[in-house]
Image 1 (cartoon, rainbow, N blue to C red):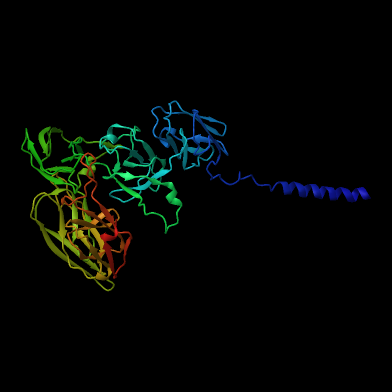
Image 2 (image 1 turned 135 degrees about the vertical axis):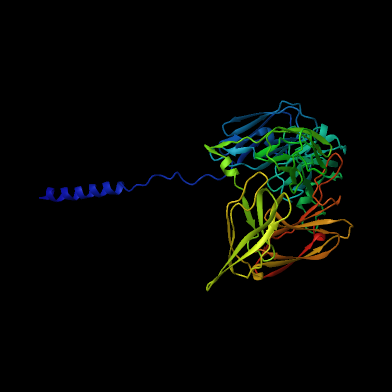
Length: 553
């Protein structure tokens, strides 16, 4: 009897245990490691003196990898021979191949050179110093590098100090000290000797610590700088001697050598000539033809486009003169291309028409054409007004009196908040490339004055006799540009609700455009000022701001 009672109980327990085990979840592996390797020991110790060996050992709390040590481990003063790096377990071993200078403080900057083995978390900036003499230098210089045009932080710049104030040194010689700017553009020279220095910074493309490529970004100061004692950093703010941080503005020097790039022929009748730098004076001579074409420069004047009036059937020879650059080009007839089995001819038989300023209160409806169009004595535009109770349709007549027109305005009177449909029948507009338009149907709702906002900006300009150029931007698109020679208030009406920004530059040479710097001629980039806040424009709202350039250093 007892056995019959115990057996069912044991069976029930086993079944329960079985189903309970089935609910065990798969291990997640724990949280992801987001910490960088930590330094445990350094041999010799940081800031040690009387260094005589040729090895430095740095041990970490975990396994690690080296990230491009040639660029991310910097020695000051620079070494003529790169050291040898090896990893032994969790220890980095640096072996010098150079004979170190006597009585000299050496600095090693690790800039994201150490990363943990599994997740790649970087150690960040780590500074190590030692001296071959009896003492460590205790002087420093610090500052920041800023993009001269965008006023954004310039990271990963190699910043260099030279003990001699000779302009050719950054072009020919290695610096006495070198460091690197961090993600915020900040840099610091620690443990350097007292004295005066020439300071220079580059985005070193070819990793030779010299400014020798035209497209390398550079930054420099016109005056010498002085190191100061690190002990000053420990003083309280009210006792600390005023030592301003340096600010260097980076730029890419303007290329002054003009060059014609390879011309483009995107469709029949269109030839595009891109130049390396903006063109001031341009001329063209046909050497074997008398073809007529329409010529158009882009806003920056570094690209000229030709639209031919006749179909180009034979190769044409032209002499192009852009400033002092002379080129002879052969323009070949357009060759049709296959696009996934479909011939582009079908697309190019139609003249593309784009409508802009639809329903704008202060701007006329404008049609833009993909190719210059021929004159038209008269054409009809049907205007349909759509309302709740009734619809109204009128027909207005317009003309295109000029040749080679790429856009035309259709000025119409609108009733605010009314819905409109604009109709233009097909084959009205004919391009000089023998293309014509499909029928056009343009729908929009007419805007009201209350749909716009107004910005009033009070500009305060320094009394320095210089001219300043202020530009209102929506995103990256310039909206309005004004020249300022004195303080004044400017109103910007009819702004669509959006975010705007204002950029001003000091137009030193009064050519109306921002100019970069030139180290060879000791010319800094033209100074830029950016309004510190994003300007939000709301409908039926007037905003007023003050931009005082005297507040900017």
